[in-house]
Length: 200
Image 1 (tube, helix red, strand yellow):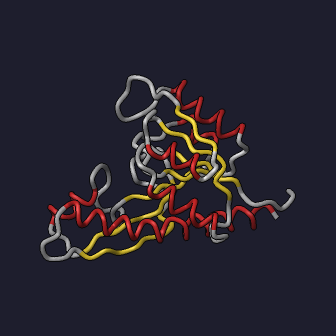
Image 2 (tube, rainbow, N blue to C red; image 1 turned 135 degrees about the vertical axis):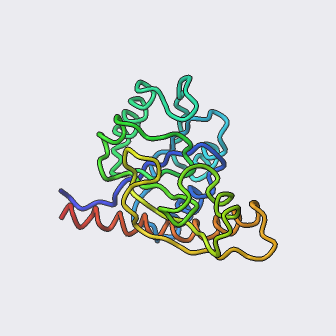
């Protein structure tokens, strides 16, 4: 394989703050890969406009009638767009659908996610609220590989965030996001470097 910078696809459903962290790291020369396409299951998602502001191709893919997953046809549409963009690996950035076989088969071991807890604790939705209600002294965020389970894949890196007296779900979530925006670019860079070494 000829040496080239790995190409990154990003999937997101919301405002795109983690995509912004990745795009800014790329712009500063510290990401180790190039974000080339952003896909969303929400037509009005802020991440699509954000991608365009960074000069990254952005597309909405209609998810179908299910609330927590895409139809196989819709997910196959994601795969087609990612393959046409010659993506080497994928970063989920607030993508609120469970990944199924079309994507897992097309990019085995090459889909990263960031989750707002210290996995394996507090899988699933609103993990910061789960942590707050449980009374643990600390939580944080985790970058992991995506597999067929929900937040069950191999852990690549974590960052710890203490719970403070008087924390609300909102204040805790905001501090976790600060940690996410530092951890995710670092882990994406390390994974991109792994891909480059594997290609040599």
